[in-house]
Image 1 (cartoon, rainbow over the protein chains, first blue to last red):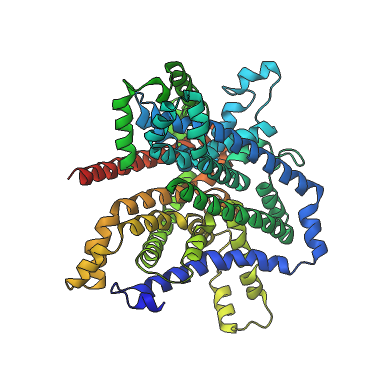
Image 2 (cartoon, each protein chain N blue to C red):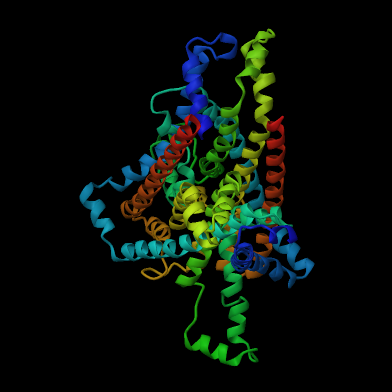
Length: 275
Length: 310
């Protein structure tokens, strides 16, 4: 504090005061309401609320579908980022802009559009229906929606790192006798690992909490395709505020842990890259 | 961004005559490009096309009939109103947070940055839930309205008289939207102002400018692109937010429905053309957002390239 007061730039007190007041009123106070609400529950109530079979089943589908979607995004996100940086092709700028579509498109719109495509009478669903493959209203539908919303996270974390890769490393590797595959595996990929992990964690965290794009395509069958955020809404509609809040607290703790992990990964990534 | 342009130019220039060991074989290039474009077409382009195809399924006439619906118009107005409150509120906060974080050193700074990012880590459904817990009938304020011995009897009487409602009403929708879009502008501005440093502000103040003069004439012109960028993203999310708003709105037609909620209701009533017609408005908004965002990025990159050249 004492150092900052000697700064010739004015406005420290005003800007910090405004920031902290607004942050407390809009974010910290409401968030703490969830934790305080659960303090009114006994341990037994809490464990029944967060550990009933239907809730456990929702964790399972949320976790597995998010994990699968983030993994697929890791592979294809890396390929997309690589192609966008390294291979010039006509219309690249438009494709590059399109990658952010899941950030810009409201999730409800994505949800009904994906359902229209993958329903048994939809463009893609009707192609697969003769083979007995159902996508909408199954676990695969949840996975598709979560893949859609997670893609930009991986591309946008990996892309800048590929842009900054020093060509000298690849040249050195090649001049020392490595073939292209060895160079990719031993020289390029290791530099991308921290960013890939960060992108994976971000896509995974976003997928765990996602609601709008999933509810239309999932069919919301309890024990099968009912994701955890939907279960919170269901409990709220039954006026089970305590049950809803208890599940919310479990999700909040999970997301805050992931946020911490992402911060650590980003620090590691920056340090890794600086070397 | 500037480095990306420069590096892609270098790659383009070098692509023709680089030795094979530092460049991918042609079949690899073509395969990977095809895989990437195929994946993007399947997962991103197709859903976007589907929105418009479904909206125009019964022809242009049916599309405009579906759009010309009083509940839909009301939903659009509420969506615009919500964004018109949430974006400026978060703009003022974002500039203020970036000012104190980028221009000064103080203990707890990195904690503050982490706390600003918190709403990004919270599920939209929970973002709505916390406001129900605060203001709902079962919540703190709800209890206060029903309390037999309120701390401030006149306040309770006044609130009841005003029929004060936050949940299942417009204030709740605005609050939940402000929460969800909270970090957008701040997190664009903080790194930008940190890289720009304080030199120009020092110069202005040394030359006798006041704090506000320095801000309006020196800092603001420097951050205007970042600011615009943050506003575009914040606005897109504010207008498109679904989960959080869904929890607090109560889905009262013609009163507390925003456009995304209106889409949901129409869809659940099997009015598919109307649902996709309303959705197409939101999809257009997304496209405009992407175009503006790209324009800002290109303008910024060009300016950087010009700076580097001079």
